[in-house]
Structures are given as C-alpha cells and as structure tokens.
Image (cartoon, rainbow, N blue to C red; front, top):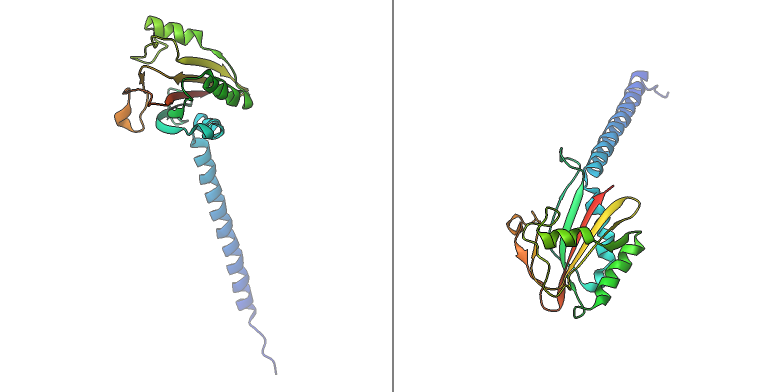
Amino acid sequence: MARKKKSGFRLFRLIKAKLSFKWILILALSVSFVLLIWLWLQNPAKRAEKPLIGALSYLHPSLICDNGAGRLEPDTSPWYISYYYIDDGGHSTSLDSKVLSVARKYGYKLGVDAKRISSIANGGSDSIVGEKLDENGVNKYYTGSNASDNLSVAIIYAGSEPLDCTNPLSDWMKASTPQSGRAILELELVPK
C-alpha cells in the first residue's frame, strides 16, 4: 500500500521555493540598482575621451596625467582633461590634421582657439597658470563641439606645458616638455 505524502511537507517545499525566488529577485534588483548608481557616477566626459584616444592609438599615446570632476562634485558639471605624449612625426602639420580628422570622425567641428591663444599671450584667466606661447608659434590650440560635448585640443611641440593634473597628485601644475620625437596632446572635454 502506497503511503500518502503529507500535504504539509508539499506546502513547505512550495513556500521555500517562493521564498527563494523572492530573495533571488531582491538580490537581482539590488545588484541592478548598484550597477545603475555606479554607471551614473562615472564621469561622462572621461568616457567620451576614450574613443578619441583609441582612434589615435597608431600615434602611440602615453598618458602623462589626467584630472576631472564627475557628477558628485556639487559646484561643477562633469569635465575631464588629459595629457598624452604622442608621436609627432617631426613637428609636421600632418599630426594636426590627424588629430583634427579623428575629432571630425566623432562629430567635433574644431577651429583655432583664438580666445585661448589671446589669453595665453596676454596672461589672461582662460589660460592655465604658467602657460606661455612658444616663441616659434608651432604649438596649436583648437576648440569646438559635437552634439553632446565641448572639446579643447592643444598640441604642444615646443616649450613647456603646465599640467592641470591630480593623477598622480604630485604632477599638479608641474610643467612638462615634449620628449624628442613626441608632442604633448592635451584633450579637455566638457559635456554640454
């Protein structure tokens, strides 16, 4: 004669299965919430810079230092500035055209940054502290935007460039000079 299973045991298994699903759902929602918060806290300007540098990889960019503010900064909108050593091809204008071409590929319409050049020449507030125009006028400054970001580009071939960096902290406002055969590429992004 077959024994009947107790209905209470079947009910216990059913409740246990529902509790497991409930806890799995709570865990999945919690992980999703944390992931969304983490994504929201990321600096969108830094994220926008990655494809630009990726497209310039054939120039062998090497990060000197960077700086920026994400969404947690109470008094500013997100921004990001980075400095790279890049192969300069012998101070040729082809480097300028390569950088401008990559910017154009990502929708940036860049032109000469006359305001920054004038400010540097006059020691104005739009220039980085200690920034000076090179004597031969070979350094290039561009600015422009695409649908979502404003981009400023500086290509430093000669002279020294003060670095507005906090990573590493010891490099903040330390001047850097282009290495032989390389230029300093400064990229500054600010979301609109």
